[in-house]
Image (cartoon, rainbow, N blue to C red):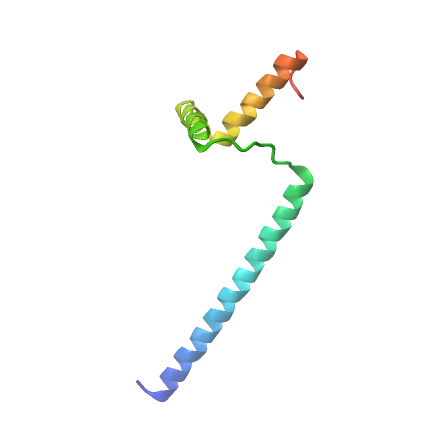
Length: 89
């Protein structure tokens, strides 16, 4: 391979590496911003429980076409409504 072709390939690799680094930095900044916004507007509500018990709930959630998080959220809302006699919103 001629020397100028090697130099061109090296330059192209450096440019590509720089572009990847820029894209990574921009993505990292976006993720950080979303996380900060998320912390302001949402709160994780949960509990630790034995894995075997969590798997029972996960299975029930799948059977109803929901994620475990959606299943738990629905259960919390139902319990709130049962206690207060009205939905939380």
